[in-house]
Length: 183
Picture: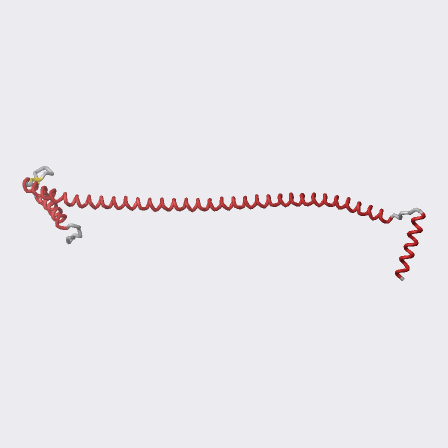
């Protein structure tokens, strides 16, 4: 509700305002006391006007207080919501930082594991190569000994064995005999 003055709840405001204006008019139009700033006013009339104005004031004050309280509650709610939004943003930022830190730590650990695995593989490869080299060297020694034994055996086979004279004549006769068969 608005009156012509644009006030909410116009009739109560208008009534209180009108009553106070009547009191002001009454004081202004009252007869002055000689040699004084005081005026003569009808006590009952002024008191009645003031009582009516006071009776209207609680409703207006209550409405004004309600509006102020509502405004304060609205501002407090807006502050709480803003604080909640800021807190949610802070929490989300912390989570993102934590996720970033977790990812960094995971990558660092993964790289460390890869580096350790590559180092272990190199060490194992070197050990395997050393082992194979030792086994081949040992095999080489055995082969050399075997080759030497084979060479000695062949050398022994190439040595001409001289037979006693009787045996050599009988072998010659046999060989001639066998040579005839071939021809």
